[in-house]
Image (cartoon, rainbow, N blue to C red; front, side, top):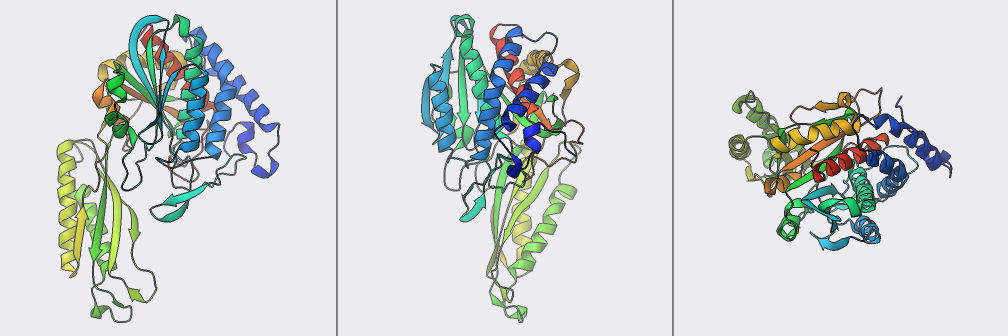
Length: 450
């Protein structure tokens, strides 16, 4: 059984007006466990003051998720909050992005803090009082929408950090750019969006930071833990689209046409050898995964074509380009062996580059994580085959991106539902750990303690 905060284990049918208060009491009681030696006293004070708000924001955003470039309600919530704090706010960046600047009362460095706001086309299967019931349209289909990756936590944490820093404005050295970004999971087909688009629209031209920071809640870490890695951290991510074209015929007479379903199955199987036989995975890991197969509509009709879409993950640019070439080769030649043809777009859009944590900045900021979460709770992580468009910011200026444990203590994080699962579950104590960590990192950097 999961070890959860009280309101998190109550099914919607038994939720009451007292559940949020009970959860807040448990969260605030637990928060003292995360106040580590060396942590700034103002971090603890602000965590105690603001966690009720952060928790409420997270639950509200979770219950009202929005897909990439459609984060209208979420961006309004963020912008209204930042305006109340007296920030210089700009909206509509990269469609629904929000940026704001806080100018401290003393001279100092310029930094950027980033959170992503978009949800995923996933139907939630958690029985929570604030579970998402939202639906939307994705790739022409009606889908459930869920914060299955934790971006609701990222947004609420950064909203809290913004309020904490605003309270310290008079004594704060430097300036902070708050970046609330849409479409981290990728914009809808045919649209631009995400980090790259925000940069194209000038957020680092108008305000050039000397460092950028971000965080991500993560299922492979238990709550209370914080993870990091220096150098290459998260993989480059690329999408592909392969359309295999055959010739339609009756299912009882397969010889009367060309079966693209059988050809597609052979393409999928043969593509696995790109990783297992053609790439030197002792050098760097590589992943080629198919995420969707679409073809046919009736049990006794062999269709004209089948569409395959998927993702490629790499850490080395040479290997990345080789996989592109190999996948096109497999798609075209295996299809030809079946008498079919393949139109392979590999990649079909511009992907995300490798997310690299600047080694010098990482070395400076790891002690800040240890002060916030406790030295024994900060762990160095393996390479992560997930991808993040935070990578675009970190190509412009030194970046540091860290991970906050989301899986309840006592539960094996290896077996926990992963990010992007319809059962992805956030232990809400992660909000406190994430808040403390980001605020400590920010203050240490601005005050030169790092």
